[in-house]
Image 1 (tube, rainbow, N blue to C red):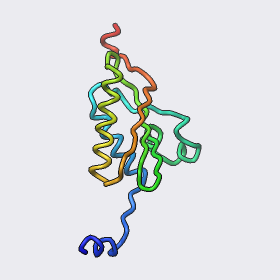
Image 2: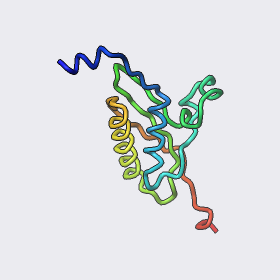
Image 3: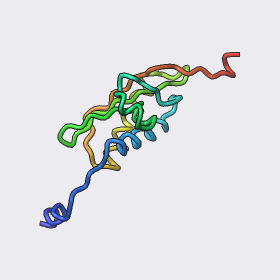
Length: 122
């Protein structure tokens, strides 16, 4: 009974930009991630001109309150790609679900580049 009463009070809408920001922070916390990557295929011209870097490196598809999240990253040289990717997937899924209540069906990781430590290269 109480649940029904709470639902009739109003609606909650969470923007995709908020979900992208949560995913962005969750990704950057993972050891082995050098930076978020720009992926031109992930955005259209309007998003490119109006949105932040987060919108260019995180793509979210919502379908009936279930999210599929694409994350584009640059990894540090020497990072074990399968392990880092799995850690990103778990971190993003947990952060988004815990903070928003949105069910995350999949987190797809796209490794766009590898970043070399300049000091080690010399």
